[in-house]
Image (tube, rainbow, N blue to C red; front, side):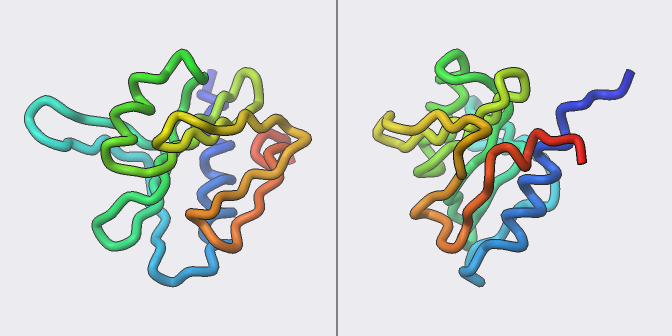
Length: 127
């Protein structure tokens, strides 16, 4: 059986690319493992960067269960989105630990990403 999980990330990547209003921001083409030195690494399904600087990292997981991963990313990105493909939520976690759990009735947006407004339900629908 094929893994049904990547589809929400493909949709999110496409939506980010089409909605980003700031030319200086770039959306990664694929998921990637990043190495931040000999003893530090983090995997992102999607990342948004301004030049060499991470702006938002998107990871697969559950919040707060995957707080370690979020903590690693917060050393490099001010905002992390945790996509839970079981509970159908996206949690925005800011570097200061605050954030929002967004269900399918909510819209995902961020001051870090001007012009982005993504209905969470659109990530998890089958069409």
